[in-house]
Length: 134
Image (cartoon, rainbow, N blue to C red):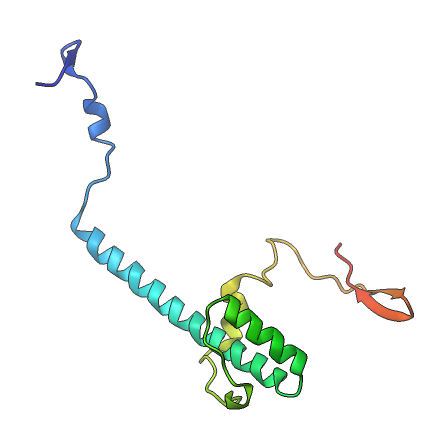
């Protein structure tokens, strides 16, 4: 028997606030799971592509080869031979959406890019350009 206070069962109001399992919950969960799996597959393709690019870049650079093999060993990844990389491997079907999906280059609402020329800075006789942030 539940305790009563002023003729009502104590805590009964909180029962109504508890999330209930509905018939749509399973289908929504399955849909979300499928979307996440598709996203992971897409990201894996991109990571494999990036890994191949790094291997191609490391072919003539023993320092980079050593750094890549050390990083792979630290991450528990199997070693790869840069000569076996396939630079012609099929890339993702819509690479143009890559940065849009990651929201890296999205502008804030009502914000536009400036047309100001970049600032020129010189350090140790090397010229670098900084873009105006305003």
